[in-house]
Length: 243
Image (cartoon, rainbow, N blue to C red; front, side, top):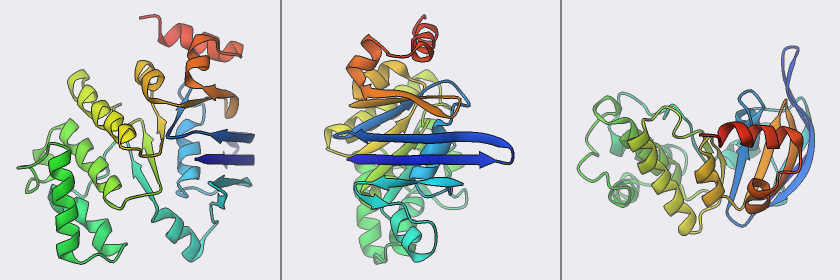
């Protein structure tokens, strides 16, 4: 997978969140976006997913520019699976229906095809027996696994994970991270925003470090954790890996 950013800039009012980033990142399967809170990681992920539009610059994913609007943007989004930290499940639908919905409403699958795919994923993610439950009846870890199943169901070109464990306790965090690691072993390609440094070190092929809206450095995960190039990355790792 190749991600190309050219003079990418995003502002909210007078606040610049992404500040003129230019970079080319090649990664076989997993790119992790790391850095301090407020550094621009989640915003960059939303720009890559076509959920936000930049003020300036461009993004190319595997030589395909992210469209600005219209049918092309909707088609692009249809090939991206996104998992947010707050699950974003429909509270009035059960787990099975949450997974089926994008298959029938966006991708034109028949109800029988969508149900078969959803049931397959519920079983793979150890959620068999929970398909009839609404989100309020599930644990946090189960909700996040349903959200992952929904994202994977469409067989996306690219998966985006925005701090998928930040709202979970340690046990639930471990079970969700195990699912994400399994996705890599299946050959899935994804970009991950996370504060779980040891997990990022284990699962990521490439690291991009963002601070103050800029990409301070990027490179192979092993090299980044062993010898970060910039002072900002060294300070960040010294702080988050201290305990």
